[in-house]
Length: 68
Image 1 (cartoon, rainbow, N blue to C red):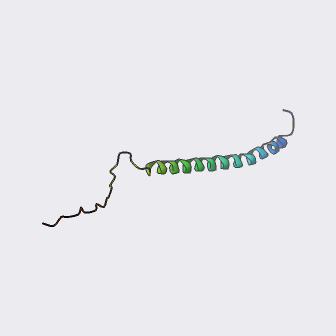
Image 2 (image 1 turned 90 degrees about the vertical axis):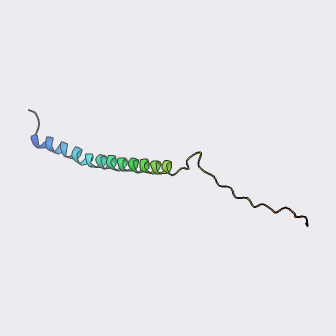
Image 3 (image 1 turned 45 degrees about the vertical axis):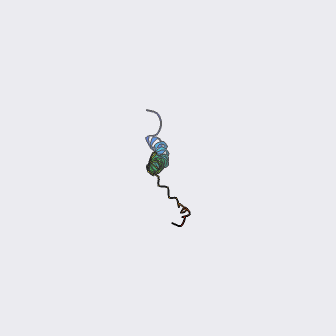
């Protein structure tokens, strides 16, 4: 073996500390993707159904009446 065993431990420590921001970024990214998926699903569910019933209201004017 060459080198100091303590030096090897010192080299590994920064790698372990750099892993947490990456894990945190992955978790936050997954949460954002999940939220976007839920929002898209709700938006698609709220759209109107094609071919639904449509009600139209008209006011008719009475025809003039002739006296009997």
